[in-house]
Length: 435
Image 1 (cartoon, rainbow, N blue to C red):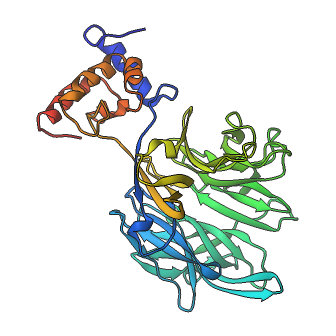
Image 2 (image 1 turned 45 degrees about the vertical axis):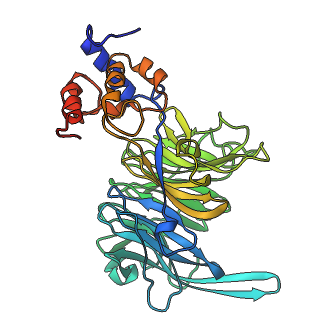
Image 3 (image 1 turned 90 degrees about the vertical axis):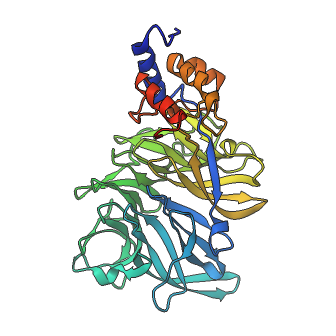
C-alpha cells in the first residue's frame, strides 16, 4: 500500500514510526571506525567495554602471559592504567557510567617444566577511579570470608561481581560486593568446581557460569541460583552467560546439540534462542553483550567452511549484520574479529585485524547525521526529496536508499518520523537550531 504525503499524514506518520522502531524493514546501519590502538601507547590491544560517555577500557597482551590495562577517554585518547605495588600485570574488564573501572591487578610468574609452561598468578580484584587504583579487598567491611581475585563487572549502582577464593583454597567462588559487604553467590550443586559471574544489571540480577566438569550458564537473583542450561532445547553439555540487560535478557553461548560446538544464544525469560543456527551449517561463536534496546553483538564462524573467518556481528531485531561489511572501504581493515561490548547509542568496541596485523582495538560509531536522508554524509538541499519520500512511503524510501536510515529524519527527537519533523527539518536546513 502506498501513502502519499499530501493526502494521509496520519497513516504515513504511523507507518514511518513502525519502520523506525521495527525490525524487518529497517535499513542496515553504517559505521565510522576508529583504530583505538593507534591512539594509545600500546603495540596491540583489545577494547572490551564502553559507557554512554564514550569512555572505553581494554587491555594489551604482553610477553610471559602478562597484560596491561588501557583506558580511552571520551576523546578516544588512550592511557595506561596503574597496577598495585609489586604487580607486573593488570586487566580492565568494564567501565560504568560514572567512569569507575573494574578489573584485576596481578603478579604473574611462569615456570618451565620440561615442555610445559606453568603459570602462577596472584590476582587482586581492583577498581580504578580517576586513574587511581584500589584493591577491593581493602574496602571489605563484612560478609563472606573471601579473597577477591577478579572484578568482572561493575554496574551503575556500584555493585561489583567477580570471582574469589576462600582462604587457603583455589576453587573460585562468585561474589557480589555492595557497600563493603561481600556475598558468596553459592553453587549450583555440591560437585561444582568454580563459578564465574560475568555481569550484573541495574536490578541486581547476575549472569555467569558455573563449572562442575562442564560449564553451565546461570542466573542469580535474590539469593537463588537458576541453572539456565537445564532446558530441553539445550542437549549439549556446555553453556555460558556473559551479559544481562535491564530487561533481564541474557546472552552468551550454548551447545544446543551434543554434535555441535557452542553457538551464540539469547535467554528470554529462561527460554534459550539459537541466534545463528539457521544461518550457518555448524556455527561456533559467542553473543558477548546486549544493550537495553535488545541489540546483540558477538562473533561467529562456520566450522563447515574450512576457509571461514571469525567475524564480529550485530543482531538488531531480525537483522544479522556482519560488521566488516558496514564500514568504509580503503582503511586497511581485513577483519573485525571480536565484538566485545555495545552501549545504548549502538557504539561497538572490539578487536580486529588491520593491514594484516591482529591486535587493533576498534570503535564503531553509527553514522547518524540528522537530516541526511540521501546518505552522502552532509545535510543540504539534496535531502529534501528523500525526506518527503521517507515520510510518505517508507518502503519506497528504503528501496531507493537501502544503506540509509529513516531515523536520520527524526528532527524533533520524538523517536518517529512524522509531520512534526517538517518544521525542524527546514529550520535546521536554513541555518537554525539542529538536533
